Image (cartoon, rainbow, N blue to C red; front, side, top):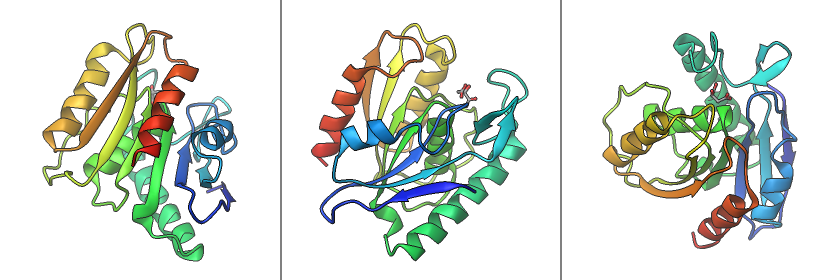
Length: 199
Ligand code: MLT
């Protein structure tokens, strides 16, 4: 699995970046550097190809998720995060995930469905993947996420479903509402930056 690692300052955050469909390991770098200019960055490229676009798991059409691929790719991603974290001597719990769209969706899946040490995530325009098989409490986790009224990919129901799943499991959830469709706005990045700086 391709990834990019950039060592930051010791006091900087540790940001783990997961791009949206069609992105790569460079897509979220500017946003991450804006979130914390001193951050250490670890950014993965999704291994699934869809008409030349990188993704973190397969789908069979818009929002028709391949749940077998989702589990396989979740295993792969956890393995890679663990390996790189060990190599770089970074405790896994120090990473804050920054995921957009497809990257945010696999990030939420890791938090909800796997016993995984990462405690914080910034999820830009995520949605529920409709998988809800676990019950262990997640009261040590905090998620900031953005939703948009007029998102053509993420319906109100799908974002609400994810929020409900997180809250049911006692995740501390902070929601930022935008009305710019599926696009990332400066306003939401500023709000995410503030949230991150307070942690
Ligand atoms: C997904 O496939 O994960 C969502 O539809 C978001 C996206 O289009 O990447």
